[in-house]
Length: 270
Length: 270
Image 1 (cartoon, each protein chain N blue to C red):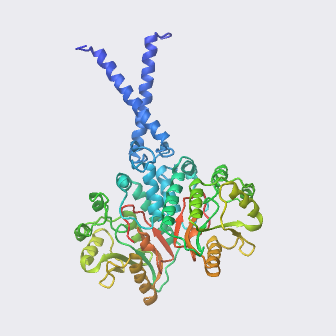
Image 2: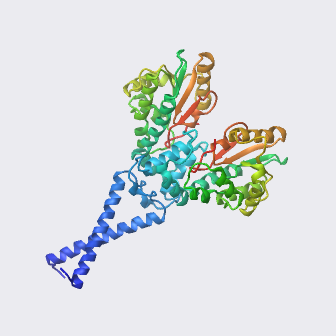
Image 3: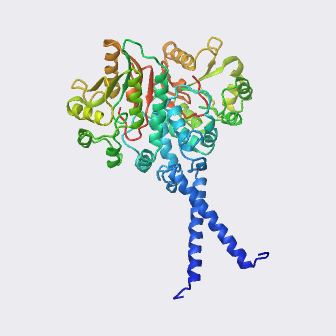
């Protein structure tokens, strides 16, 4: 048709608007499928009160991962939704994989000596084994020793895939692997050992838990420094790498030639 | 009207689609205005090649701010756009403010003694003074000493507002303030001192630059540790806080009672 009535033009414009809007829907949906959009843009801007994406991102990055908080008790209430989304929608897994890749590349550049004394130290909770299910159920609330004991005793924590892969790589390359955890020796030895095997972590050299001499009062930095000092000074190991989700895994004495900080915005261990 | 013809229903559905789509447009636009949307969702998912938001976020957080890279030469090419957006669209400024607030809260809980020996150490580049304009013009490329010299000699770096505010707070509370920078003493003393005044940083105790004895070969960790050791051991200062955008500002000896890591995904100083 060579000419169009005004009514036809109106219809054409309307169709174009619909097409454009539908395209926009597809962009939004594609972005959501690719997990690109922040967890809830409708929560508003950077505001602290609303738990805005910008505020919670800033909290996670600068307070938690860059360690400027230097201690925090629980996820800020406005950011519980943000942390849930961060842990569940792919960014957490990508962040873990990014660090694991970095650790594997570093390990690949070291040739372990024949004396069998080149070692790596790995933390257990939220390094090898994931407590995400537990913390999700607890809405990322403050530490609850009774509930955590019930959870950890079941020995059903899933393994964290990129760290399982790193673990296998380190083993294959001939490093000794020490798993060091603040979990109580008496309460958790059996369930933790069984959980590790079930989650694909077998063939490590030793699982070192917190014994009666290092009870609750002692910080993780102090306990883990003590463990590493013993490994280095008494047993002659060279700690080539140290992997943990808490800064307290990686600070203190004999921290290791390189330390690798995994993400964890769920809780803080002093 | 009690009944509607099929044609009316068609129109109604069409109007509803248009209204829904327009609302979606508003959500998108509101999100953009609030700087909530990632810099370019259309760049795709977490892919490294495409410089996806997830990949570049992971690089910034885990490699740069959590220091797992342990040294990097330049922003990864796929993330230049991401870093530009991060620095320009509000998240960087929020991150700086988050850390500055934390430092101010910590400072507020310390009462400086009457002996005038309670001190803070602040870095200069991208702590007090912003080089963002320079790095934007250089597309966040690798370090270029000639171009940087030309830029810094002009003495036109803008001050970073939340740190200027922290600086004023510390001064008002009676802390001594030492500005410590790896900038070369001979080349940059005059321009840096003038720039600091122009940017609102006046009334500090000393500006300590890198002299002839501490030239390029020496790492920032080593030079800055040497400066702090002198302040503490020879002059009797107590370094209560230390603020910098590089981990090398905050590591080494006499780092300070608390260290505060500001964000900087533009460059790395070893």
